[in-house]
Amino acid sequence: MKPCIPFRECLACLDAYCEGELLGGSAPDAMLAMLMRGERPGRYAEALLMLIEWIPVRDADQCVGRNELVHALGPLRLRHQAGDGDAEAYRALARLIRAIDAAYDELDGDAAHGHASH
Picture (tube, rainbow, N blue to C red):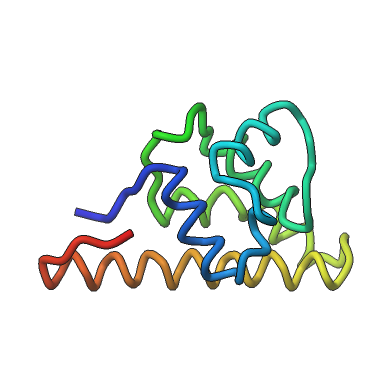
């Protein structure tokens, strides 16, 4: 079975891989509330909005998996690859996708060895 974790835990884990820049010091629940109100805090706001709109995420307890996260970011990634967007935003998106891969690779490894993670 593929790992699936609550969105709040996912955000906290990804924030750690992004050195605290994903949430910008906000708690995962607070960030989700800001995004759902239409606020765009920080450089990762566009990517986070894509996640909650495309998955769609309705609350912080909703379970999310790697494939749906990466798939939800696909349109944004394609737009940047087509040259529509600035280089810094593209680097942030690429960093987030690497963080998703690293986090779920860790979960896959823990599951294979019978350990709990995050």
